[in-house]
Length: 324
Image 1 (cartoon, one colour):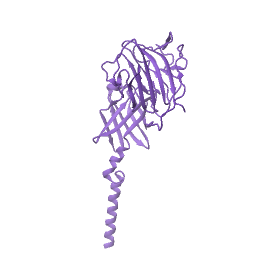
Image 2 (cartoon, rainbow, N blue to C red):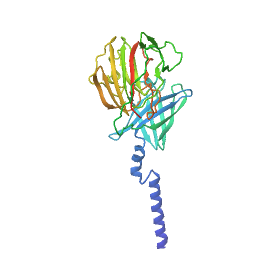
Image 3 (cartoon, helix red, strand yellow):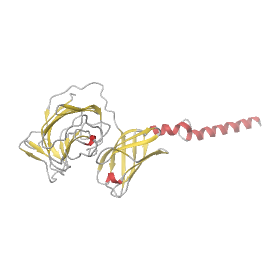
Image 4 (cartoon, helix red, strand yellow):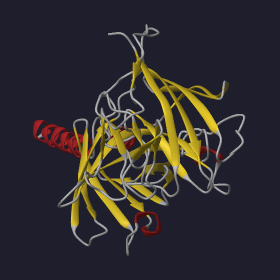
């Protein structure tokens, strides 16, 4: 009788322990936090529409116990999201319709398998889209680069070495008197070569009420504009769009030739405008809206933005890659 009672007590204890473990890990109390932690950090995302893929970016973090989300969508600047939650091993976040060109808010739902987030969203076309996210690489370098030979990217004669994102699009890029000119509301212009770490020099002349930018590795835009006086500093001339504001903030002067000298090593960027350092070895957290892809660990091209309004001229475009 005593043996039978002992066995019953042992069985009951075992069942209690198993129930506690089944709620997530070693104990019910600590498992939820451990599960949530796996979702936190930066994610390079790809949205898969039926006929196209769009790069995007997500950062999830906890602030005073509350989940916060920052998101870069198909275009535009990184922005905080109004809603994000982790529950039962799933993530859910919402991007407002006003930011998405959609009739309804985009609601993302996903799960984590290994190091890959994946799930679905209600696309702006009314169809269900798939999405995936891979943990963004740190891109930290263990030693300073040694530099190779400078390469001229623009020959001041034609578009040799470049291609338009949409071949045959109108209006098109032009070369006039040794100067490269944006079309205004046309295609992007992408260099055919890809680079990892580099020093870039280019000179630009931004017309009145005009906008362009230079994308580093095809993913991070350094802004060029004379049309955004009410935007935050990170979205104006000299900023890494939406992430890093220039300091001191430069004057926005139309019809004047100016020069960028930009150094990108891993995620660390330095921007010098007309000889003045306005961003000094700062980290770029993630991709800019309009990036060619979200594969941050890979080399990428220089591209010049042609889809914004007005006209911007470019000349003397050279790049010095890090030596292998």
